[in-house]
Image 1: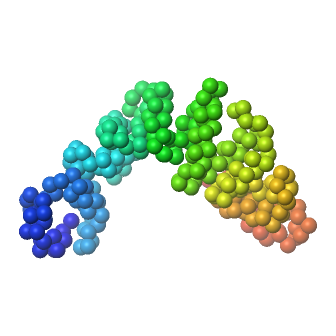
Image 2: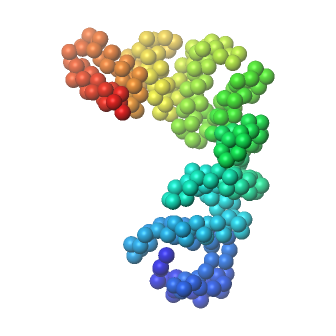
Image 3: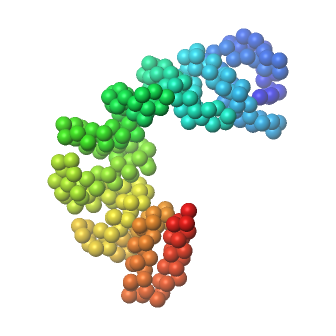
Length: 289
């Protein structure tokens, strides 16, 4: 990336740790951190409108990762896991980079190692090893690891209590979408009395309400119906319809179908027909996709 102020500051940068200049006169990165910064610069179009240099960025990113920079190792692991920008997915390479990052204590890397092993990407699936990695990531506060591990542990009577505890932790995750999904799952467990949990519709309603506030469309639909029926929460038709509209607005087919039915069977059905027709058109459009 050509920047004139780099040329002007070259002597100072040389003294600060850069060991040489490239053909364009820019200082050559000499530390893992400088290499990572150069990779970030090359991946973005520069001020002169030139295209990003992804190949060059990969070279510096690899050098940074080989020199031990944790974030570079995580970035390379992610790139090789999914592929893109003319880089093919190579889960074996992804695993190697995540393993290096995990050796430095990265709980994020532990999650991805578990993902690769559980799904058998580039190697034979190994559920036991995946669980071990996910447990480390879960203990480190990685919400996605808590969620996935919870559902694995819930399948076994001997580990269901640990699974429930992890699912509750996932519901408190800073990743809002994940937290909402975990809360919705807890609502379903309480409503159905699964995994040794006694049926408790009031607790179910609390979980669904929490999930609905987090934006989960399934929870918005279920909690909206609870508000409409007044069971097990106090009836609030206006809020109930608002919840169902929120779920429908996220293109939840069940919510849209329910909303159409409610609009067309209301006392003021004639006044609602225009809205009901619009929702019907939207539902048909979703079905055609």
